[in-house]
Image (cartoon, one colour):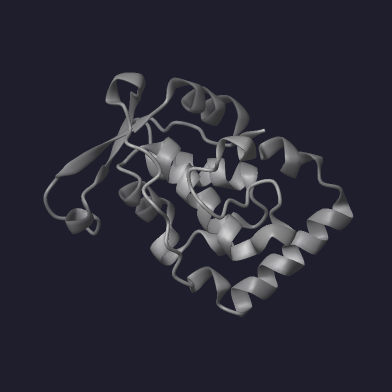
Length: 165
C-alpha cells in the first residue's frame, strides 16, 4: 500500500485528496463500521513495542499502562519506511501507527479520527499494531468501496482461498 501511494502521480493524488475531503464533509468517516475480529494474536511471534495508558487514564491520573506488541517485520517497516522516529522516552505505539497509516493512505488524518483513531484501533486490535493496521484497512475499504479501493476491499473476512491470489 505504501508503494502504491508513493507511485501515485500528481493528478491521482489530487483526485484522491478531493475525494477524501468530500467524504469527510459528508460524514462518511464518522459512519460506524462493523469490523470482525480478524485473528487471535500469537504473543510468541510478537515483540514489545512500548505501551499506552489505559482508556481510563488517558487524560492523566494513575500510571496504569497497557503493553503494545508488534510483529518484528512490521516493526522494521515502521522504523525504516515511515516518518516514525522513536523519542528519547521510548517507543510510542500511537505515533508509530499514525505514521504507518500516513505512509499508506492519502489524507489519513481525515479518516482515522474519533472512534477510528490510532488509539481506538489499537484498543480494538488487542493492542497489537498489526491487528490495528488491518482494522484500519478494513474500515477504509468499507468507507471507500471497491471503486476507490480495489487493492484492499474485502467484503468478508477471512477471504476465501481463491481470493488470496
